[in-house]
Image 1: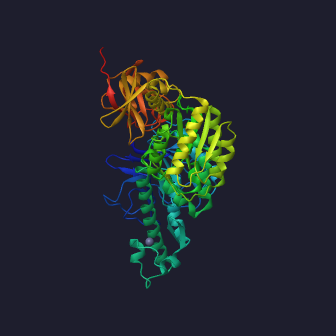
Image 2 (image 1 turned 30 degrees about the horizontal axis):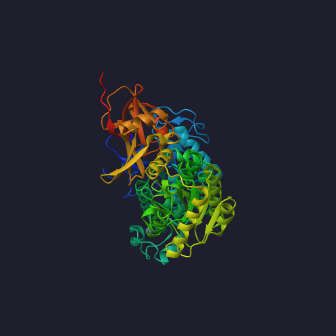
Image 3 (image 1 turned 90 degrees about the vertical axis):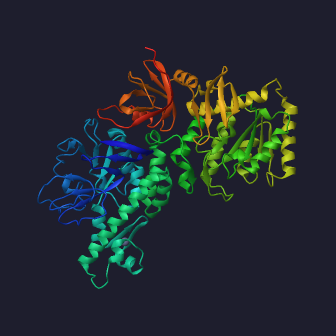
Amino acid sequence: MLEVNFRDGLAKVASWEPKAKQKVRTPAVLYLTSSRAALFPGAEAMVLGPGAPLVEAGEGPVLIDDGSDGADIPAGASCPSYLADFVKDSSGTSSKDGRILVVGPRPPEKVPDTVEVAVAGNIAGLLGDPKRLVPFMTALRSSVGYGRLILAPNAGEPAHMALLAYLGVDLFGSLPLALAARQGDLLFPDGRYDANEAWTARLCHCPACTARSKEKAGPEADYASALMHNYHAALQECRTVRHAISRSTIRELVEARVRSEPWLVAAMRELDLRHFETFERYLPICKPFLIACSRESLHRPEVARFQMRFREWYARPPSAKVLLLLPCSARKPYSRSPTHRAIAGAVDACKAPHMVHKVVVTSPLGIVPMDLERFYPANCYDIAVTGDWDTPEVKMIQEGLGHLFKNGNYSAVVSYIGGMPFLAEAVEAHRRAIMLKPEDPRKKDDLASLTSALDGIFENIGVDGAQGQPARRKAEDMASFARFQFGPGGEALVDKVAFSSGHLKLFKGGKQTGALTEDRGLISLTMEGGETVKGLGRHVVEIEDFEPTGTIFAVGVKGASKEIRPGDDVAVVRKGELAGVGVAVMGGPEMAERRAGRRGAAVELRHRRRSTG
Ligand SMILES: [Zn+2]
């Protein structure tokens, strides 16, 4: 039995019951216990190899107990000996009960329904080789689906764990920990250290290092101490990884951890640049925050998805004919910052504020129209700001601007940003462009020159002054947001907005279609809105013929749009009729994995319609 509790891209936290009444929370380390590998009392999960000592109840679940005799641990072999019975040729060999499948160098095309764990026996040969490791892991995940565990028996060094979990490994082995101890190395999340050096420098306070006595030192005693240290270090790091996944910060942890070995950085880049599509399918639509502290943050999937939607789905509000480029602010959403409030005052003082399209130029997102400022990650990202712009950032911003100019068809462009000289070329290429370089964007003189620059433009292009235009613009901004969330056609959800009871509410033809939920940074649909979304054919979950109540479980899902991401608002359809609206717990591709014995919630309903028949 397996149930996924938290999802963050390919990384997940799950509860697995390998045997009745035994529960393992993943990611976890499977500690091998045999006549040659000492029992680790702290183990959360164990594999009993040959000659294993008797395991007391409460020592942690035992996962594999094949009872074979005389086997050894061949260091560096493609698959550990305790799995030798399962590995005959290469792919598709499974355990007797069919729950564990050992896969070979190529992921299997078809996986039997009974399989709960896929064993990547060849993983050791792929560590250090990002060009092979990353394609293998993404292909393996696509092959076995999201609702199964991947065990990498020959991987589990603390410094590799965050990245490997990020690539989809759910279970690690303890063999690399023993191997490092034999080599006289202590493992830490930031890499490996010579054991004697580490002990002399008193680097570690784990129980093994604390208990070690100099008097009793010798090759075997040192090995035993190093092994127990490595066991503790792996357990500690595995818990850190698990915690990071459950609080949606696994990417931040990965960016910090990969610094110890160049191939780890290369693997992260490989995933970002060449396997984004597979990864993005499983990435939640919104999270509590995004911290961009490295060059690689520019390419992280959350950022790439925002930019992809900007290129493919975004359309500017129709009334917003004058583009106004603005700097970002530390506070999010931008409009709450003192700078943006001052700028809003200057814009509101011009002749036609409803015709001004405020767009923020920033890193790592590039271009953020203010109508999207509440969408993740625009609503919460944080980045180190020095005022210096790297070449990749400049390129990203120039490309974003190029796209905005080409598709926006603006009547005029005003730039109100100091310290970004690289904007000039793109901006001045427009036939009606004004570059203002405010010393301090909040200074009265600068703000006054912004108002007069805008008024000068309106004298030239004229003001669309039809009645109700400012109110219409507010609806257009929300319609643009809806399109960004639900894709082209999503704008049909809104022709009017109103603020009441602390919420921005969306209306179409006088009926409420949804409300903006600030903490999610998403529109929450009403049943009326659900009808519109159903009509779009995207963000739709089709269920079997039953009366849905609070939670719709995966087993009751018949089909789901491939665009749905965990956290998305969806329309639930039964027999062609709207049955409810709610929040997707799984992404569409995961919902669509159909097999017997599936567990877990697929959708949490917000509203539902009782059937009449
Ligand atoms: Zn230690």
